[in-house]
Length: 198
Image (cartoon, rainbow, N blue to C red):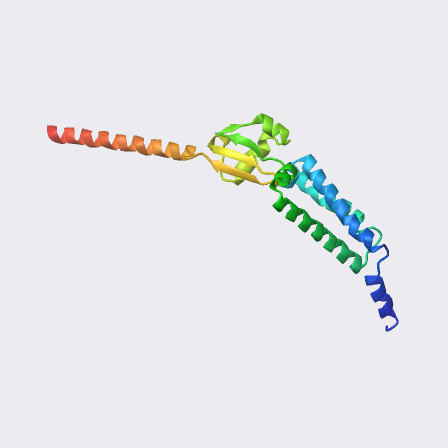
């Protein structure tokens, strides 16, 4: 058992590839993935359907070997993780310091619905179907695009949805209350007329 311990420790912590390679691999994969997600659009980040989720999960598994190489040691994993976290921190710091670069890399928000009307060109640009848009609106409490003042797909893949002010339901409810009020006034007037006659 004592003879097995040094071998076990050696296998767990000794690197089979150079440290420089363990640092460079995650950085290259990170840059590649950021560029790919920027090129292929915000839809992948939004995960609108199971296919988008499968792509993201498969993507992480696909690039795993590119990040770790032939090394499965704990030391190699720690170096790879620290490299990924460091490159992400550096990128976020640079983007924070240079808003124009941040805007260029992240892209612009896309308005999908404006004043209750769907922008078909914007939907096509983002490769979204009307059914997917309605599903997003439903998740935000709206049954119909006509109830939505604005729906925006943000660069990070999230949706900003703002309802009409007042909402169509509120307008209908107000109209119904107004009609009831007029009807009540007419009933009171008829009652007064009948009381006067009788």
